[in-house]
Length: 146
Image 1: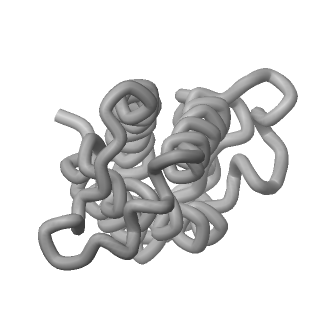
Image 2 (image 1 turned 180 degrees about the vertical axis):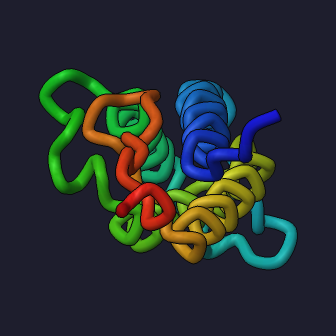
């Protein structure tokens, strides 16, 4: 058994969350509803008559899918390889999801994915330039030096 590569696990969580976020945003165009409408109705202007929250969720979900898969022009760039940038950007996605009724569960997936990315960052993992690969091992170890 090998070691768990936390950034790959987090990437899969974020891909799942982003896919659900896109689906929830599309559903939100047909049935607009704010998750927190049982507390206040002041947020209803975010979903109707102009679907601002749905559009933001759709755009953010598509950007996360492009970032996490990644697309060819994104792969290997500093934003793609940065775990810190992910930890700074993904709370915004979680907030957008938490505001819309259809994507309330997706916010929890974003939080779990952010925790996995933080775990990977705290253990010193790096995101490889080539997607879905493992970092190269150091062939010369101190025990082999003569």
